Image (cartoon, rainbow, N blue to C red):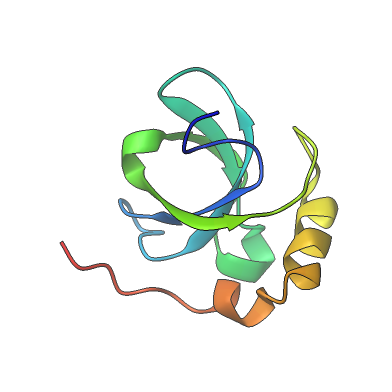
Length: 93
C-alpha cells in the first residue's frame, strides 16, 4: 500500500483544478492514478493524473476500485465531506 490507494482523498496541486479535492478511483502504475471529483461536486472530472500533481490527505473513503461517480459521491456524503469538496483549498508552496 502506498500513499495513493483506492479511496484516498487528495488535493490537486497543479493545473486549473489546483486546490480542488478529488478521490483516487484506481491505480494505473507507480506514477499515475485515475481520479474523480466528481465534476459537479468539486470540479474535477474523472481522468488519469500524475501523482506528482496530487497531495494526499489522511482521509480514505471505502470504495471499490473503478467505482462510478455515484458510488464515490455516496461515500463522500457518508463521510460528511460534501461541503469540504465544494470549496477550494489554498495551497502554500
